[in-house]
Amino acid sequence: MSLNLQPNIPDPDGFYQELIDSQRDMTDAQAQMMNCKLVLVLANHIGDREVLRAALEVAGGRIGPA
Amino acid sequence: MLQTYSYPKFAYRQSAEQKEGRVARHPVVVIGAGPIGLTAALDFGRRGIATVVLDDNDTVSIGSRAVCYAKRPLEIWDRLGCAAPMVAKGVSWKVGKVFFENDLRYTFDLLPEADHRMPAMINLQQYYLEEYMIAACAELATVDLRWKHKVISLRQEPDHVVLTVETPDGVFTMEADWVVACDGANSDTRKMVGAEFTGRFFQDRFLIADVVMKADFPTERWFWFDPPFHRNQSTLLHKQSDDVWRIDFQLGWDADPEEEKKPEKVIPRLKAMLGETTEFELEWVSIYQFACRRIDDFRHGRVLFAGDAAHQVSPFGARGANTGVQDIDNLGWKLKLVMDGAAPEALIDTYNEERAFAADDNLLQSTRSTDFITPKSEMSRRFRNAVLELAADHAFARPLVNSGRLSTPTPYVRSSLNTPDEDIFAGGMVPGTNCADAPIAVAGESGWLLHHLGDGFTVMTFGSVPAKTVAAGAISAKVLSVGDDLVDTKGRVAERYDGRPGTTYLIRPDQHVAARWRSFDAAKIARAVARACVA
Ligand SMILES: Cc1cc2nc3c(=O)[nH]c(=O)nc-3n(C[C@H](O)[C@H](O)[C@H](O)COP(=O)(O)OP(=O)(O)OC[C@H]3O[C@@H](n4cnc5c(N)ncnc54)[C@H](O)[C@@H]3O)c2cc1C
Image (cartoon, rainbow over all chains, first blue to last red; front, side):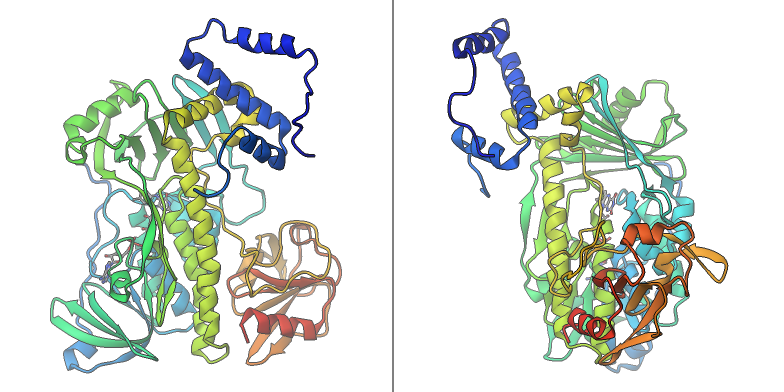
C-alpha cells in the first residue's frame, strides 16, 4: 500500500468542520495535546511504516539521520 | 550515612616479578577488576588461560552503581560457576508499573518464559556481584588477581604489549601477549592507545539515592513521569537486597550537583515521595550525568576493550554491566583458539565486528529511552505525555511507553562467522543467536541444556548419529545427541530449536548458534566450524 494523496474523505466540508469544532473550546495547549493524540491514534490505525514515513515527509518532516 | 554493607579490603601482595626485578611475559593481562574484568578472569581462567588481573584499588565497587542483571549475563555467570550466590542473594522481579502525574497508567510483566534455569531479571547491589566473582576467582589456579596495581603506561610491540605498573612498592614493567582493558568509562588505557570515544552527552542530571527502609512497596519496578511529588521530572524506584531501595530522581540540567547531594535537600524529596511517616535512612547519594558513547574499535593492536571502557550507556534499561559481560562471553573463546594456534589472529577482529554491532544496538535503545524520559523540546514532551495519557485506556499506546527497555542480548544476525541457513526453520534460533536454555535429563538426573554447551564447539543433533566428534582442522567439536546423550524431558529443546529427527545445530563455545541443518553432514559441519573460526 502507498500513501493515498487523492481525495478520500466523504463530505469534506463536514469533516473539516468537525475537526475545527472538536477543538473549539480548547486552549492552545489543550489543542496541541489533542493533536498529538490524534496523530498517534491515526498512526496506529495505519500501522504500515512505509505509509507513515511517506506521510511524515508529505507533512514536511525530515526522515533519516540528522 | 547508614551502612548495610562493609566493604572488604583485599590484601596487596608484591608480585615475585616485581620483587626480583625481572620482566615477565604473560599470555593475557586484564586491566580493571570491575564486573567485566572479573568476568574476563573467570572466563579466561576456566578456558585454561593463565590470567593476571590488575586493579588500582583494593575493594569492590563503592556507592550506587548497577542494580539489575538480566537472564543472559546470569547464564554466562552460571557457565562460570558464580551465578548461584547472585540469584540467592538477589531480588527477582518481573512486574513494572508506569505512573504519569497522579495515576498508574500501565503495568507490564516481563512474563518470563517457563523452563529456564535463570530468572528474567534480578536486582543486586554491584558490590555483592563483585564480591561473589572475586571469591570464584580465588578458586581458580589460573587467575592471579593483583590489587593496588595501577597501569600507568602502555607500549605496543608487534607481538606483545609492554605495561608500566605502579604498586605501593614502586613502578615495574611487565609484558603481555594480549591486554584486555576493562578499566571503566574513564579508561586510562583508551587514552594510552589514542582511541576515540564519541557519542552523546545528555543535558540532564540524576540524583541516585540508596535508601534503607522497611517498606511495603511490592518487589516491582515503579517509574513515574511527572509525579505530584517531583513535578516535571521522572522518578524510579527499585528494590535491592538487605531492604535497600534504589531511587532515581531526574533533576534537569540546571540542578547544582553539590547542593542536591546534601541530605537536607535529599531527605525532603524522599519524604514527599515516600510519605512523612515512612522511616528510612540514606545509605548513599550521588549525582550522575549520563552519556551514550562507544570506542571507535574494540581492538587496538593487541589491546582489546570490553565493558564501560568500550561503551557507555545511560542506565535506563540496565545495559551497562549486562552488555559488558557479553563482550567477554564473545572474546574468551576467540582468544583461547588464537593463543593455541587453532585459529588465525583474524578471529580476534570478529570480536569488534560482533560486539560493536551489539554496542550500537544498546546505544540506540538506551538513547531512545533517554529521549522519551528527557524530551528535548516542548513538542516532544507533548507527544510523550500524549502517549502516557493514551496508555491508560488504549492498548495500542502501551508499546510506545519507554521507561527503559530492559537489556536483552543482541543476536549477531549479520556476523561473518554464521553459516547462512539452507533449510527452513521455525522459531528464533537463527545463526548468531544465543542458545535458549531448556530442562533436560542426563542418565536420569535432571539438569539444564546450557550446562552442556560452551566447552568448545558442540554439535547438537536430534536423534542418533554414528559420530562422537567432528574434526575441523585443529578443532574437534563434540557431538551431543538429544535422545542418546540427553533426554528432552519436557519437549522444550525440540520446541525451542524446532528440532526434528536429524536436525543438527553447530554451537559456538559462547553458546551461540553458528549453523544449523535438517540433517547431520560431517563435511558441512567441518566447513561451518572453519567459518566460525575464520580458518
Ligand atoms: C547509577 C548507575 C546505575 C547502573 N545500573 C546498572 C544496571 O542496573 N545494570 C547494569 O548492567 N549496569 C548498570 N550500570 C552500569 C554498570 O555499573 C557498569 O556498566 C559496570 O560497572 C561496568 O563495569 P566495568 O568492569 O566495565 O567497569 P568498572 O566497574 O568501572 O570497573 C573498572 C575497574 O578498573 C579499575 N581501573 C581503572 N583504571 C585503572 C588502571 N589504570 N589500572 C588498574 N585498574 C584500573 C577501577 O578501579 C575499577 O575497579 C549502572 C551504572 C550507574 C552509574
